[in-house]
Length: 78
Image (cartoon, rainbow, N blue to C red; front, side, top):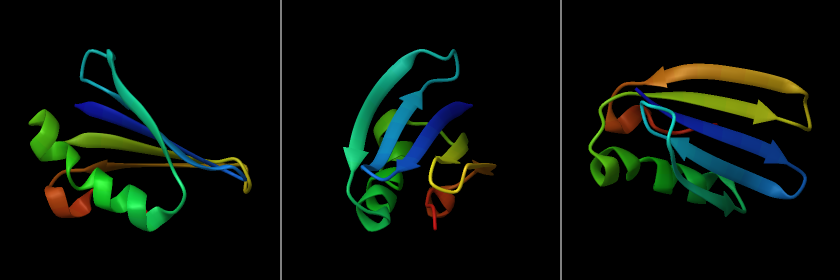
C-alpha cells in the first residue's frame, strides 16, 4: 500500500509520496486543496496502485487524520 503524507501549513500544502516499501517517489507543493485533489486523483493511474494510506497533518490545527483511499474517486481531501 502506498503512503501519501500531506502537510498543511501557513505556507501551503505539501505532498510527499512513498511506495509500499517506503521508498520515496515524489514531493511537491500546492497552493490550495483543489489543485492537490486534482493531482491526487491522477496518482493511481500514474503509479498503478489501487490503495493508499493518506496521512493529513494540519500544522495550523495541530491535528493528524489518516484514512485509506481504495479507489480513484476516494483520493481527495477536504
